[in-house]
Each structure stands twice: as structure tokens, then as C-alpha cells.
Length: 439
Ligand code: XUL
Ligand code: CO
Image 1: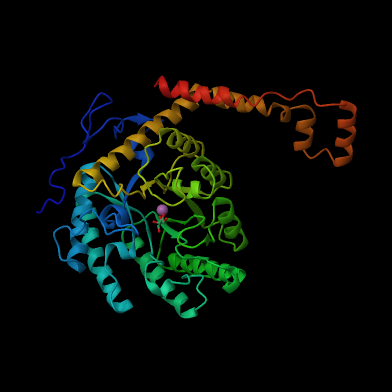
Image 2: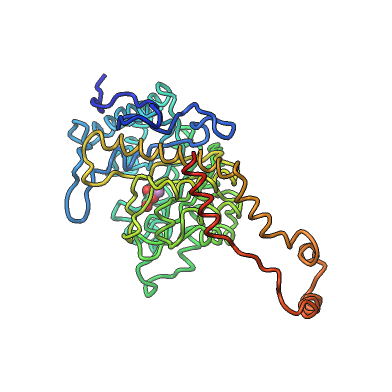
């Protein structure tokens, strides 16, 4: 059988002293952390689109990485990607993958032809899943690449376009069920606007929800047992994406009665584009009972677009894992590397080194997050900070025994607030550093 990553051995854990670029320094898959193995806690997934399709093209030039896998293209290439992808996941010890319909098979001239292509490749993927014991984390439909989606898909002003989007979602759901996928993602794609002058925003949002309700109904019909997710993103490709951030998306889901069926897939770089931290978006999802999954990557703080870099920022990853643990850990979700190596990192080794860097970062982040919780100083500080709600007037407010009138009397009797305490931000940040550096 052809070996596609022929310069890449099986990637093993060698420990923190190792200087071997093709080895894990921190990701020790069977190590128990927080009562489960690292592998079970982190649930890493390879994303088909960047890892097997993106060649590093940008608006100034064509790609630099060769992702033709020795083929002339078309279905031959789609098949080669299946073999190459499973070989790569196996070598890296990644147990899940995520896909768009159009990543795995080329679009044909008709829906029937596109679906035949998908079925043929799905057969091959199912065979490889069995062979390597690799699973599907989630599937999705690419409702943004084809020119027909120039004005949106579920939010298109043209009903024919909506019908094409529905056809694609139907097939992508069937494929996800066929692969036993644990989730199905709606990322807004071109669901947004360039100018409100040509946009009926309320109607477009109604239609976006209509498409999602149809998806839920069909998923129930075909026995989909996974979670539905929306992946918030504020801009790019449209100037304003309707799923701007976690809070906006939750408002949308509640307005349209979709909140019981949907959770959020939080992507780090999308959070920063929205002007939030990764941790903030995870916290918003969690406090609303909608934390689901993560697209693991990072942006560049000096750039205003979605650079989708492999995550290497331990600080941000550790705070993210702290939120994940506090939210009860992953159930059906996981850490999908929606990340691509830089355009200049074009050699075969680079895609592997990039995944190693990302996996090591999250392994360290996982351990650090548990250490922070074990250390207890942050939780103790928080408990103390809100102590006034456990007795006295605070308790009475929480129990519903106070009103504006009674509180006005209470405040007047108090004269002034003398019980404020420091927020100790610098202390808490130094606790974080101390725990991290003493690990
Ligand atoms: C785009 C993005 C997508 C989704 C899946 O920014 O993140 O790749 O993750 O459609
Ligand atoms: Co993503």
C-alpha cells in the first residue's frame, strides 16, 4: 500500500527532555489526568479541509504545499486523501476527524452526481474507519464555496438557493449518520450581510432558523443521535456574520426554539475576531448550558482576520481547558484542529509538526488546568469574593425577601459601603504563573 507521509514515522511520546521534532513532549495519550486518559479528555480531531485540502494559497499567490498526493485530481485525488488522511491520523494517534461534504468528494454537475461521488468516497472512509478504529467527531455542509451561495445559503434572498442548501444539508446529515458522527455543525458561511440597504435581516434570520428546524426534523427521522452545534464567528467572509459570537447565537437559538437541540462549537480565532477571549466565549456557552465542542486554533493579535494558526499559546489553551473542565469536560465534542500551517511551512514534516505542537499545547493545558483547580487558590478566592451573598442581606435578596423599598431602607441605614475588597487580579495572575512554572 502506498505510504503518503513516507518521511513520517509513528509519532510517540518521548517526554519533556526530548528534542525530536517528530515526537510528543507532553501528550502522553494513556496518562491519567483528572480520572481519565489524556486521549479521553482531549478527543483530538483532524480537520479534513485544512489538513488534506488547503495548499496555502492566499490572495497574492497560489498554494505552496502539494496536496495532490501524486494524482491528477477529481475522484482519484479524493480517494488518495482518504488513504493519506487515515495514515496521518494513525501516525499521530488522532482518533477523530471532521469534514465538510465538499472536502471529501468533488461536486458534480448535478446534485445526483455530487451525491454519487460522496457515496463512493463514504464507502472508502467507512472501510478505513473500521481498519484504523478512527471515528467521526462531526460533519457539516459547505454552503459557502459554490458561487450559487454568493448571497448566502439558508439566508439567501432567492428561494431556489435555499432549496439547494437544504439538499446539501440533507446529504451531509446522512453522511454524518453513516459515519456514526457525534455532532453536526452549522458554521454561518455566507449567512450574513454586506449592507443592510439590500437586506431584510429579520426575514433572513427566520429562514436560517427554518433550515435548522428542517435539519433537526430530518436528523430525528434518520436516527441521528449526535449533538447539533452552531459555530459563532463575527465577520469573514461577510462583513457581518449573523452568528456573531456566543451570546448572539444563544439569543438566536432561544428566539427560534432551537436551544434545546443545539450547543456551540467555539473556535478560538473566531472568539478573538469578535473582540473576546477564547475563555470568554467558552464561559458564555457554559453558563447557558450550551458548551459543546471546540475548533482549536489561534489568531495573531496583530492581524484582524482568521489566520487559523495551530494553537501554541499555552496561557490561552490552559484557560480554555479550565473552562472545559469546569463545564464537566467533553461529552460528544472534542478538540478539532481547524488550523493550518503557515504558507511558508510547506514541507511534508510541517503538517505533522504543527499537529504535534497543537496536541502538546493542549496536553500541557489540560494538566495545567487540573493543577490550577487542585491548587484551589482561585476557587477559594472566588468563594470569598461572593461571600456576602451567603448570609445577611445578600442571602435575603437571593431568597426573594427584599424589594427596592426594603433595600433602600437597608442602604440608608448602612450610610456607606465599607465592605468592598480587592479583586486581586495581579495576585491571581501570579498564582497562574506559579502553578504553570512549577509543573
Ligand atoms: C471557518 C470555519 C469553518 C468551520 C466549519 O472560519 O471555522 O471551517 O469550522 O465550516
Ligand atoms: Co471552525
